[in-house]
Image 1 (cartoon, rainbow, N blue to C red):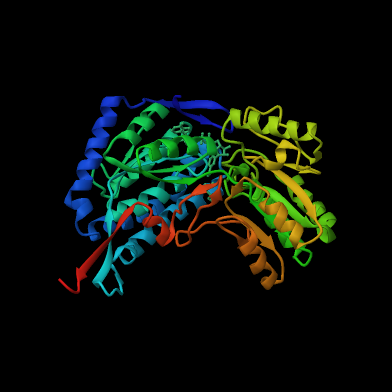
Image 2: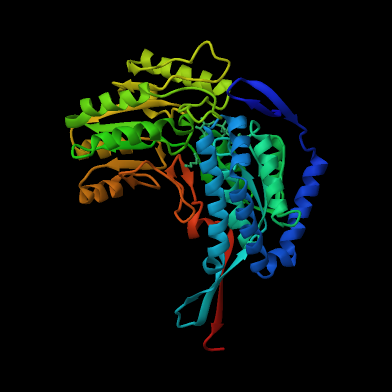
Length: 459
Ligand SMILES: NC(=O)C1=CN([C@@H]2O[C@H](COP(=O)(O)OP(=O)(O)OC[C@H]3O[C@@H](n4cnc5c(N)ncnc54)[C@H](O)[C@@H]3O)[C@@H](O)[C@H]2O)C=CC1
Ligand SMILES: CCCCCC(=O)O
């Protein structure tokens, strides 16, 4: 698959990038491994933290320039792209300020003697990343691993090569030595060969279930650990005591942000029957008010999908859902008369469990609305999913919210807010949404050797 920059707003090809051959891959792997063996990785963490501080400063000082690269290449609204660049700067700064603390030796009380756990890098990590947050997904894997001393090789999605190349240049400009972070324009087969190589000790993937299953199986076959952050079908639950104006506005935004192409987007809206009519009316009003257009235009509130294929997939999913009995409450079609990859904001209701849509993730501005009688029905419906990534509960009763948050089978639950992300908070899911955690203290320990040392009490 070629690495191409095609602007989703008008489908114009901007640039095609040269792929890397096997000789170049070997060179990258050899350089990354040699760096892992060097004082850079094995020595004082301070030299690595200095690079993360610089990387954070570089990104924070170039928000507008970098945001435009994102919006032109994958269609994100310019304001949201700025937010993505800023959180990347925040993540680099977070690990610069906290990695030393996270990785310091941890003492253990034992009768066997003085005991502690040290944290050591394990080698070269292969990262496979998607297009939907083209800088954030890279920073999420680079920052903790650069801090711990692992070298990172990255295969980015084939539709965001300019983002991939730009990020690699930023890491180098921040002072990282060659081999610390290497972007590879390579094939899926080349990814498999890299995973097989003994110098690679871990694999991190964000993307689809299909890709995750293939890549994690390859890693497991070579007894290597992987972390997976995959699809989601997150609930947005609105209880009978919720602030409906707030929930309707937050819900619409949570569904259409990044044109709905977010693994933790609100996708299944589960509404208490007492407030269903009011919520649906207000939610629909917000969808009606959306303005499609150029992601670079600040007045645009709904951008294009990342590719023409993404529109085709979403359109077929909506048509199939209706064929199987779903009601099209609003929208439902590709936007015509426009060269861009635009799909109407859409609301589907009356989806029964035998409708394929019931279990499907819609990676676009398509909301599924369900109505329940009580909290018990809500939890049953919420957990009746192959996925388990994030979720939100809107209510004014926080005790009720705490109980529901504990009962919903996902990796993350937000109360009175859409699912979000921050450097200091773990991110990840369960079931077919994957395993492992990124960010926070959990993210930096996924690919370190947590080595026990014991000074025996009795010789
Ligand atoms: N969890 C998340 O944040 C994301 C989830 N997705 C899910 O993935 C679906 C498709 O989006 P895509 O970007 O096409 O996801 P994808 O899973 O096809 O691609 C993600 C990354 O994995 C790579 N990849 C795919 N198959 C591979 C293989 N066999 N071996 C090695 N690398 C492989 C891709 O080239 C890309 O770099 C979306 O509809 C959504 O369900 C997509 C983007 C982000
Ligand atoms: C702002 C939320 C980030 C979600 C990243 C993802 O879709 O994998």
